[in-house]
Length: 249
Image (tube, rainbow, N blue to C red; front, side):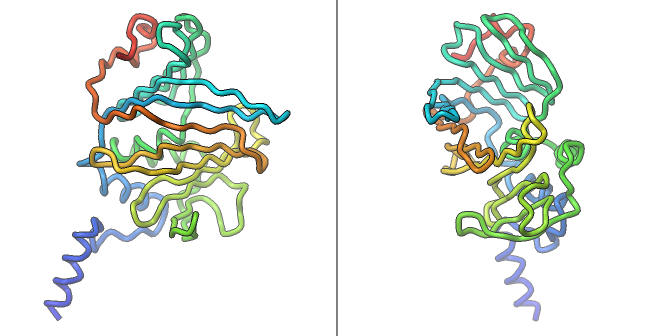
């Protein structure tokens, strides 16, 4: 009996799952995600993003964005060449928009892709749980489903419910897959945002493709290239008062 128990514990450890760690609700899941990668996940990241907007008339627009990330809760996006001074800072649940180096808009904003795709692995679970709860996701609701043929956890909605706020996590690797939530500009417009093309990266993972679906139609995609994990980044890059003066290298 002792040998069998030892074997179970050993296999669990090798699989990265504590035998005492049971996932019974969304809080358990967010803690498990953190615990799986908190010691290995990269802390900074840069990449070039091909952003494609799909218009209702069938046309599309392609732009090149440059992104810099510092965990937790710091993302800089330069829309086009950084010297142009156009971009956004998403820092500590606030977004600041810049046009030609000047601050245009600043308002509270929580980017769930940043929270569930990155920050969850680099900040205390209690902070993530607090943010997700505040944003209206019901962490008491947890079920299992499949996404693109793989087992997944779903938090916030019962089976068949694709209208309630919810997020999907890959069961095996505990990676963010999908979030369904109202659009920021229009609460009646549900967005289904999906992460794909996961690649191993410096002790963690990166989804190199993001797709936004609205009313059953693809409206926006992101494709990443020139990916660099753990580059040395100046914290001033994420300071709204220094947006124009400090630029990514």
